[in-house]
Image 1 (spheres, rainbow, N blue to C red):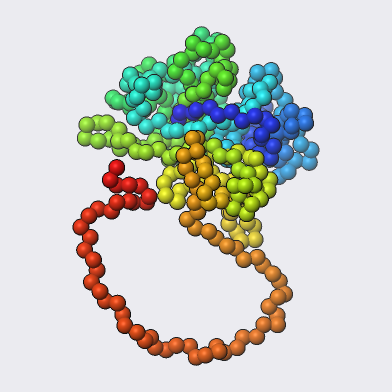
Image 2: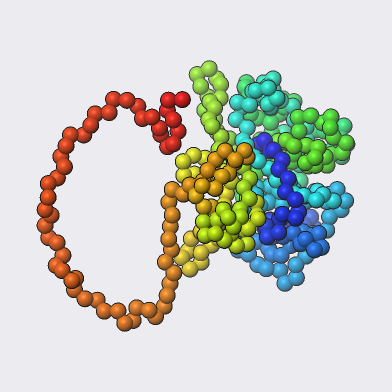
Amino acid sequence: MKNTVISLNLTDIDGIEFEYFEWNNSNNTGTNFIVVYDSESGDFIKTATVEYGENGQNRVELESPVAISLMSSQNLHMFSNQLGGGVQFLEGSTAITFFKQEFVTGNETGTGELFESGTATLYCYENCPKAGMTSSDLDTYDGPYLTDSTDVGSPITYTISNSGANTLELMISTDAVAYPTDSENSSNNQHPWGVRSGGMVTDTSSLSATTDVYDSEIVTVFYEFETGPNSWNRQAALIDSSGDIVSFDKPLEFTYRHEDANDRTGSAGNYDGQTVMLNYGGLGDLWGIPSLTDTERGYFTPAFNIADAVVVGSDDEYVVKALEIEQKMERTDGQCTSLVLNDPAVPVPTTVNGTLNNEAVPTVTDAPRYIAGESTTE
């Protein structure tokens, strides 16, 4: 995955909830926390624990919120659905960073792109996955990874190519990084959801410390690699008769700042001024708006709705328009007790009068000019 860094000032993240996974080496267990930023103390605060089961999120509020203690220049790795995935905070910074993420397809061959020369070299310092991974490596959290490098001049070096026998596989010399096949159907390990690398860069010349990989003022693009037993851990591609990877348009991804003026109701509530990462995959396929659980009705609803004609996109080049709108009726108890059901005021019709239009169906000889809003003639 290619990650393009986006910064968001700490002053703009009030109200955003993050998830933070904390590992306890003493008993080899991990806990997932809900975290918010406290602007008064300048700390990220753990407010609840959260687990996921068949019925969705199970959240338990902490009796006493706990601040996350960070050392100087330490990275705090979190997750936010609202911001589209991974979030990082470097202690001492005035902003968090999150990422516009694109899956590498092998077609990135233009000037300055990853596969301009066919084979790319990637450098890693933290959470660098092993080649020749075994099932026993998955028994501990650190098992699938090589020892972190603390020397900026001695990164762990990988290569990846868009052609050949090991197309789009992460390689250390001639060995591929891959989840062990004998563990694919086992959940009795620490990595049933897969193994993911830390940030990797194509050039280390601008780095003075290994943590600079996560400094958005130094590195604006980095890469991550993931492997695992699940469909979402892997990439599928189509190969044409020449052996080249077939290219498809990628979904659009851009940040959006919601405001009262942009809300369909005119009031954005708690989301006034908040930033979200939106994705657009085609006609009617816009996602990224946070959702809320409607416990009474048993389904999810969007936390807010964007009004028609709101301009969005990295260059303000798109306009939002709703294709469907749902109106929910509110429950009002005790209002129907005096209603009486009567016969219809007039008899129900039993026949239909009139002449059916049986004109011939027109013959279509030309291709449609537009399909799902896309011109077929350009």
